[in-house]
Length: 248
Image 1 (cartoon, helix red, strand yellow):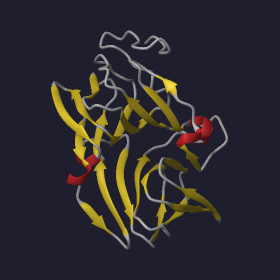
Image 2 (cartoon, one colour):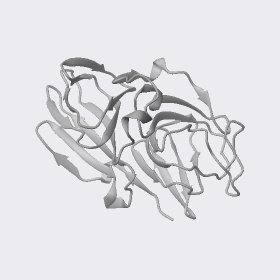
Image 3 (tube, one colour):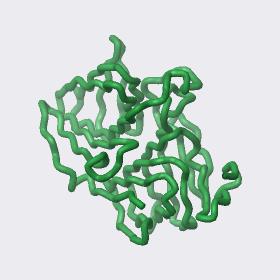
Image 4 (cartoon, rainbow, N blue to C red):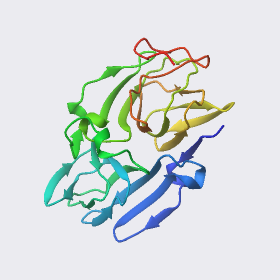
């Protein structure tokens, strides 16, 4: 077994030059397939970052700014996502009036370039992506996946209604950040309360249920590897939990 729930506010803050980072999920909590951080760039700040040998995805929680890569400038706004390939150095800038807050997930040991099936997009707006159906009236929108250049993973936003899904599992490793709402994460025989800013590590094949206990739809942003569909869920006996899921 494995997996955990970490509150963003409980992760130690590391102060840089105008940038505050919190390492929420990573090897320090037993999460090695993916590493999650929450970044906050102060008003008027800028910071240079490098992916090294990893892939990286960003999701804007609040604020506005821009990402500069290879001489091009890409606008960042709430609910937009960015994809950075291995070996890239980029700059985040915040000329706005409020902090620029982002969830960053890095992907060690990425797949080779040939794993991408479509043209690379650096930044994509969530509002431009179609909603797709998953289990128990749930929906999701893809932020990035191999069709938009991300080789190793799927980056998505999920919408979880108040209808409880049955316990199920996935074949991928996943990290999740709760954007809005309140609920309970049920896994490993425990029920852990969730709210905005909760961070979840969900190892592959862990039987679980992310339950929305609030009055409104819960929103989460997640990254999982290997890439696939967020709707690919299985009951504990291995049978598909959704009609669109291939059998094991």
